[in-house]
Image (cartoon, rainbow, N blue to C red; front, top):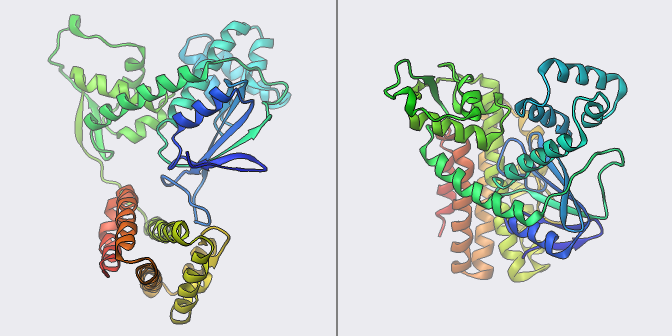
Length: 410
């Protein structure tokens, strides 16, 4: 297991340590503390030093290896509110009253629902378990992200907690991921509109739908795509996807054509820049990791020489700073926006490709062609995932071709 211990506690990356392994370690060790997991909202991963969008963050609290509470970056009250409505524990009017009261009392929603007599402690504990499960099951879908475990850290003193056996969550979470993968293979593409079938070819006696299916069905209006339905649903991504799968399988819902979304030019430029930076962040980091594994501290000197050489020919690279771990891209985005629009993209790509080529030459000269080929294969694999995020823009600007041309230097 690739982890390391710092003053903050156990730290690592979900790309090298799976969530299941991490939870199992905490459970079997009987640890007490908080596990914080975070990643960029706009992409699958957020490497150090990269430019990113909003950060998604989840916090899970443990007591002697068992899960007692979880939060989704401050959205726990929203999750709890949706859950009590789904479970028909209270009415929408009662929830609205509690939320309005919360603005003045600054108390947690669960505490208010107890004080108002709308929920018993047992009912609240049940809803908290569902909330924790929803957060954890969603986390099992994260293939990357950084984590930190803070030993001994507990939820706020006024937070109502529950207790869940961690290994039960691991088994159910793993099972759900397998099921989710099968569902995803069946669901239409993200740009396909869903609509309710006007005249289903199925007898009413054969219709077997549950409450989740019905709750999802009302969100399908002939104009929304699956991502839009997922965003509106209070069921969570897995249960909503499962409901859509059931409705499609039963023939109650069908595909209604593709939805053409015209992106504003400004947004397109921002997305383009984000994808470019992601591609070269992962390319450089793959090389840096490869060299560091073979040469240790000597790797920094070799790669820094390559960086300094290319900064001479490509001034845009002056905004890349060699940090303790990886190149820091923090200043690059602002620097690019100061370049004239007609040549902005070309200047950036020329500089990034030149440095990538120089890095690969250094690896080949120092460690040989076989090691270089392994690094290139890893870059190709990671790049394919990034390109898939917005294939339309990537294709328009030939991003994949640009990168592959540089990787063909051997």
